[in-house]
Image (cartoon, rainbow, N blue to C red; front, side, top):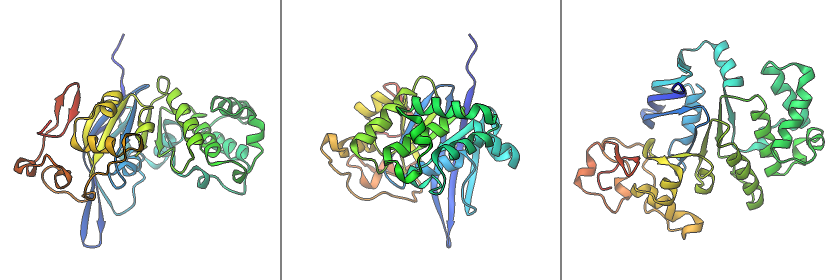
Length: 308
């Protein structure tokens, strides 16, 4: 068998923003790739750069963004694409499931009409669209898809709205799905159903899960822990989440409700310069942490810490 081609490659990505007279560094030297049917969760506190990564992959950053490095979709640079080609890629190549599903629907249009319009825009024939919508809603756990398609968005609960949005995005069979905080604002039962749905895709779809929730991260094969725009630990999800190595990863695990909710001391450092960005909050910090910290392989994963 031949070697599988990377569907997505991110190489040396840096993103900063001009804010007044200052330049705010958000993403620094980001590197990772995805092959077909790979899945990766990106976890970290608010402000760690997770959603900026999604926007950077889709070339959807604000005008005051300063970007360097490359993002390649099937070998083609996202940043060198024409407007037409980028719209094609966003339509069927890479699809974003945004935060706050209930705010993503047009309140004046029925769900079915909006899903149909999405599929028409992606190039599907009008006659095949109803059955595509029906089948996808069934896959996403709806017993009565017809009732969903005939409903207005306000008739759906938060969990139902999220699953319907997932169904719309998966209906075009994109190469890559990006789910940005898919469980945000959901109650426990709705969250469980959405996570079950995402977990069921793990072996058949290529996706990136952006989340602060460790339970959601378990849906993916691999996990990247971000702090101040850098990946500080990366590897198999079970290893990273059950037995974290980087002090920040250890802190995230201890802060989770199921592990005692022990908070990480201090506040996030949003604009780090040299050295380990976590050093001001780390109990293991020494003078050496003020120098640039290389990424090394430890117990089968990549970790950016000299004390591991």
